[in-house]
Length: 281
Image (cartoon, rainbow, N blue to C red; front, side, top):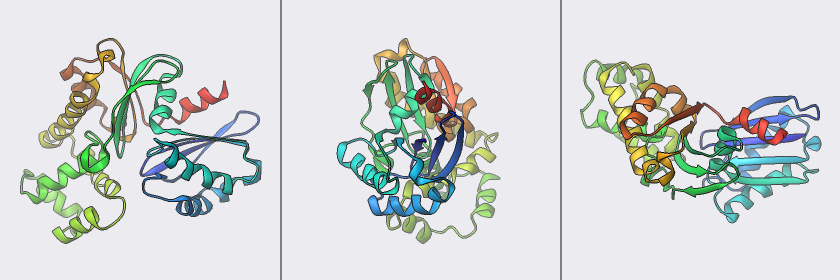
């Protein structure tokens, strides 16, 4: 049995491949070694993944994850996997960026962007990532992501910049939100990126309002200008997107692509099905 994992900061999409190559999906919380150590990963998967499969039958895991960008971080995940699956022969830990590229492009070249809770971008030549960005995470980067969109929305609310009737709708949707709650979640509690990304559905629900439409489109333009158009390949290769934010705001993404003069590729909510094809070959 093979497991293929695409893990962001909010959730992990697991695809289980049996010997007959029939795949089914399981979902757990996100696993990011920047935020969770080996014991925490074991605890999460013991509760949310192991009850749904036979651990002894798993002989290969291909794990693509946010935060899996160096040997030290990857080792945190690998130790957890090897403790959870006693008969594991293959444990490949790679970045979520490579997973997105393989899922979206298979063996064709293209620019691939992740727009989920966080954001990232790379150039993929059909085999490997040839050029990327130095992602600085939620506080110093992640433009265009769910975390960035939510942070911008909440900032505008507290600075009295939300137009009516959006301001009234926001108050009705989040009646318990005050400055103390906001700052506790931003600076004291874990996963501030998840917290701010949780406000993004409000933008989706009100996307026909000019404010919401402009906020999202501007965030995507900023992301593309900051990272993607700096790639020389951006004038030749299509720009593909993977992630829930890209999926839910595709019209605004197309507008942003048009604004910066790039070519729109495909938009995938998840690279899972593409990764199943990639690892079934």
